[in-house]
Length: 161
Length: 99
Image (cartoon, rainbow over all chains, first blue to last red; front, side, top):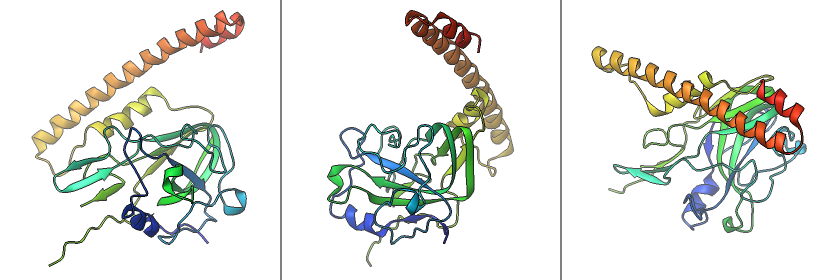
């Protein structure tokens, strides 16, 4: 049982076709990130973010709040990168700004990005991406920063070419 | 022929990186390096003259960003100092000013 790479959730692809997700910076859905230990197992078949220690989510520490906190102003909410979604050539893309949890003691192997808005449908934790950090990453009473790729047509997290 | 859309993530490449600290936050120098890496990308296959010039420019921008970050920290500390002093905690405010 362990992380086994990055995945774009298949349910997310399907939900795109039913206009479930809105990545517009202003007025769009809220997207959050949840952190997990290497005991978690996620694949492209993952549909919803499971929360709590029983599901291998890391514990609340510093500005990270376990349990899928409600509301778009939660400290787990991701800010969109500037001017997203965007397009370049024939590629459309969207991305998030880097996320830092401060004053945190965290050991995490990976993360889920999910749509936490009510607009996402009856399931309030619709999965978007599974991210594998490649190895355990740890902070101790410090900053835990997830550096997102550059928001461009070649690197952005979500690209449709 | 049908067009297809493909937007899967590379499964076994790091698409995000994670940076952590122990017992402190990131320094202006560390953040400036990250900032410049997002702003300026220099290809290893660029012509040597152009590549060297771009890297030199990148280094200058990094120093400038770090300098302004330090100034922002000092300025914010002044704001925090005054807010805490005005709230009736001059000794705590002084401790923060001396950080």
